[in-house]
Image (cartoon, rainbow, N blue to C red; front, side, top):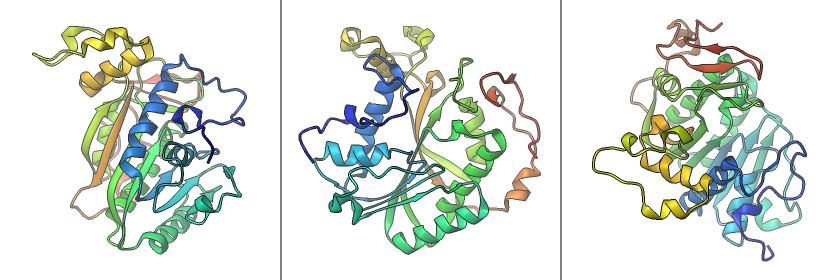
Amino acid sequence: MGNNTSVLNIYGDYRDIDINYNMTSQDYFVHMLRFSHVVDIVKGKNIFDIGCGKYTNLLKALCMMERGPDYRFYIGTDYNKCKKWREDYAAIWDKTVLLDELDFTDEDDFGFIMDSLVQAFEGEPFTITCFEVLEHMDFEMQNKFLYNLSRILHYPKLNVECCLFSTPNFNGYPAKNHISELSWRLLEEMFDRYGIIIAQAQGLSAWKKYHKQEYLAPGTNPPEYAKLLPVPLQKMVWGAALPRKYSNNILYNLMADLNELKSYDEYKKLGSYSWGEFRQGGSSAAICDNPNNFK
C-alpha cells in the first residue's frame, strides 16, 4: 500500500477540479476526522456504504489508515460511476463490490441493491455508512431516500448492527452545491415518520456564533487545549461539547423501531412536517419555513 497512510490524503490526485479541499477548510477537517472515527468503528466488519462517491473515500480511508484493506466485505453504491482506486490490488477487490450508477430512490434500482445485500450479508451483521448524501437531493427524493433506508433497517433478513449517518444541518447559509439542506429538527422528524430511531447523535462542528460558554450545559466546560487549536478544530471541539442543535453537521447512529413499516404512499398522506427551515432547489432557491405537502 505504500507509506502514504494518512487519512488526509484520501482525496487523491484525481478529485474534481472545482472542489478546493485545503488544510484550512473546516469541512475538510470535519470530513477527515469523521473518517478517522468511523474507520475505527467499522474495521474488520461488513460494510454497506450508501453514496460512496465517485472516488470511494471511505474505502480508501479504510485501506490507507490500516495499511491494508482491514474489513470483511465492502459494498458501496452511488448514483455516479465510481472510479476504482488501485484496481490492480486484489486484496481490495476480492472483497469489494461497487454498485454504481444506481438511484437509491428508484424502485427498480433499490430492488437490485436489496437483492445484492441479501445475497452478500443475509444473516450476517453489517454496518451502514451514509455521509454527505441527503443534501444533494430535492425534498421529495430525501423522503424516498429515508424511507428506503428504513426498509433496509426493518428488513428481517438483514442484520444491521450499526447505521452511521450524517448530512449538513441547515444554518441559513447553505452550500451552493447542496440542493436541499434540512434543519436538525426537520431531519429528526423525518426519521421518526419513517420508523427510524436515533440511538446516538453527536455534533461534529459548531457554528461559530455558538462558541460561547452560555450554550454549554450547566457545569461543563470545553477542554482548555481547544484554545490552542486552529479555528476549524476549535469548532469541532465545540461541536462535540454543545447540544447538537448548535452543530452544522451531526453524526447519527440509527436503528429501526419495532413497528411494521407502512407503504410509502401511506406516509405521503401524512402531509406536512411540523418543523421547517430548509433550503430547496439549488443556490438561488428561497428558504422555506414550513415544508408543504410533497407530491
